[in-house]
Image 1: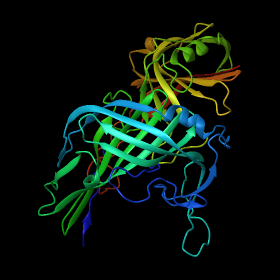
Image 2 (image 1 turned 90 degrees about the vertical axis):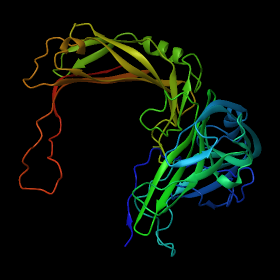
Image 3 (image 1 turned 90 degrees about the horizontal axis):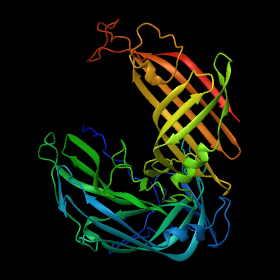
Length: 448
């Protein structure tokens, strides 16, 4: 019997709408079944498409022309080709510039995704499958070129958009059919697969487009195997832009676009968002022991941010904004009673309201400090339990329309020792450890 071992992926590809490129064949534009179903959704759901006019206001609160207003242009980004283990390809690790030009093909659809039927007899939807939220799909013609000649593609494609400020594009790539010089010359199986074969499959170029620029990846799946063992791993061939400050822990994240603090990435600059937050003044606060005070929150030291698109692989939460902009800031919190005078590294998050009017902001702090750094938490009059190893400080404040609300918590954290002799005896290769013990010390809420 064949044994299958899956290597951990280094990146997750985006399950978006596809386009056909260069010399490639097949209907990848997202238009098949445009008056009914389209089964091209990689989430496994059926897409129900309703054709609409470009200037028709959809149930989502925006039209296709709003998307084309920023997407129907030329996008430029520096692209970094990555060294890929066990894969030799051209152009190999290097840097170049990528240009994407889009123009409207005059067609758009409202897309509603539903779970497929559980079987071929039509006896009801498949239970437990999460489908993407409703979105607009806009037909475009695209030209993709890299300065090093690796890409020189022209293709019809589709953009998906859940807001008037962000669109996503995906292009399946067949390595032997690109018009540019991109070529995979050799794939070597891992040492544990002796005498086996290896290949790269499912190449996909995925991009997020915003008024402030684009970001994305070229990824593929490396398949290896012999008669006894099979393995697969997802690898990244290229990333754009080469600036990785918005990538974070997910090294394949194509859903974060770097943006300057002074740029109106989603319609509001970081500078304006900071001003709105700082303009709220004192907020009525209630401590966990029911004592009352006033809280003043001030954000400063605004840095350049990242446009982040909600979700991955098509499983967006429709209750969350389609996209947000996240900026690093310093957050200062002061209460009139003197119990709280803290300053922390935090985040300022902003997004356009779903009704199309104005913007909302959120301040976030999530810090862990050493047990001997009580003063750095910013709180006074705190009794620290014996055995405390760290402090956790959490703060979240939402500024939405005419309302401001939030909460904070100070916790004592400790890690019990690992169990060295588990009882009863288990087959674990290493002893088990208990989870972190959390002791609440202070809490507060505020609202206005």
